[in-house]
Image 1 (cartoon, one colour):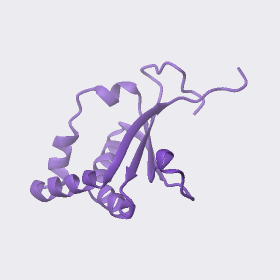
Image 2 (tube, one colour):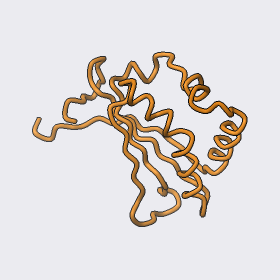
Image 3 (cartoon, one colour):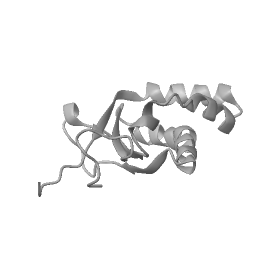
Image 4 (spheres, helix red, strand yellow):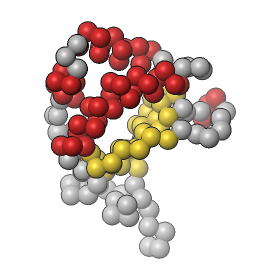
Length: 129
């Protein structure tokens, strides 16, 4: 994606890495809840053209506790504007999950499993320049 620049422009894809650090022993439960309740919302946004791609990775080996993370989800958004355009994921969730009580309960559970979560917008750097 060498088209990304230091200052994202309105017509360029915008990459964000979302890191999740779970309580020890709960990484799999976290990702199962993520896949069940949040991934469908993101997948629908892909169908809508808001998201260009989404990837999930985990570390092969463990790191020190201060640098540890369990899951990294990288989303390539259509552009920077779609990340802050007032789009309501909540409304989309209501359409996708009619049983909002269960959905809310499971999402609350997913977040109680976290020790940390951070979002890192990233840019490609052209080493030839």
